[in-house]
Image (cartoon, rainbow, N blue to C red):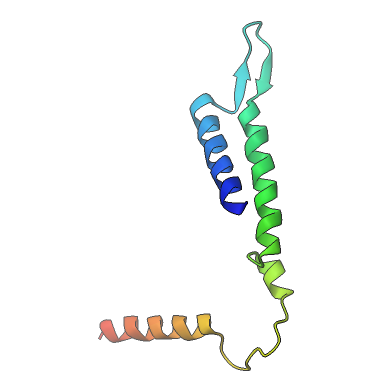
Length: 91
């Protein structure tokens, strides 16, 4: 569902870029591009789905997984290794 919503958002954003954000009807009435509504709707749904998967900073903070280890996380360890490698290359 997340991938489908992402795809819909990408298409809607491209259409807004191609057609413009504001359109004019044949009678001169100015209106918002309907693709903007679709893009906004897809963006809101993606945010809800990302929150469910713990993929936003605020939702990730709410995760309390049993058996979490004390000390640096895997991400912290990986960043430390990358930083150590880049410092070695600079010498």
